[in-house]
Length: 216
Figure 1 (cartoon, one colour):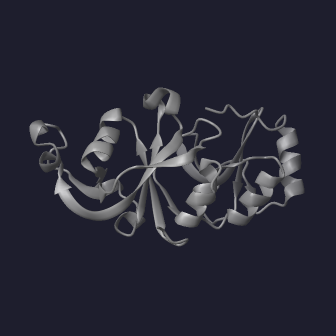
Figure 2 (spheres, rainbow, N blue to C red):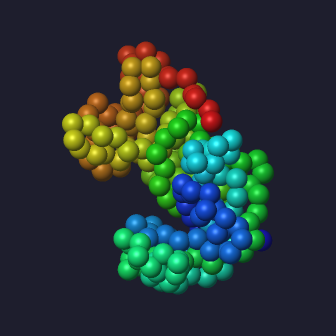
């Protein structure tokens, strides 16, 4: 049905009402100002459930074919909420086909903040956890560290001394986070840059070892 290079967009669902709209009415909205680059190229839309979905939280259980998109005002999407503070804001409205179960679901190994994930169909089909979906220059090091038992988190937002950093990789340790950078993004304090596995192993040991995974 889909080809390996087809774009997959993973959207975050915080409310069951939005999932019901996708399931029953066949559309999903994204604020124009926050829309990812692949919004108009996505062939597949998948849904990451947050804590609002109880037993199904922190995982991707469903996806659907994207059949079209348009820009619309919120008041047109929800005519019964014309007095909403964002009634005049513009949203991308993605029209989707019937929902398809992702079996097995794609879980997040740890609780973490996730926004949109831009991926490809081959990665989506093969993923065993959420971090497998990301596409970046950190792919090679991510696979190496994962195979070495470190199970890093990808595209991880870190706040330090009032500054926000987007780390390519992060290894949660007993004594805090170990950021690992391969790109030219601003580096958070204490980050390793293009390390080998031995350097990562030593830095993790200094931080008391890898923190246990708290699987959802």
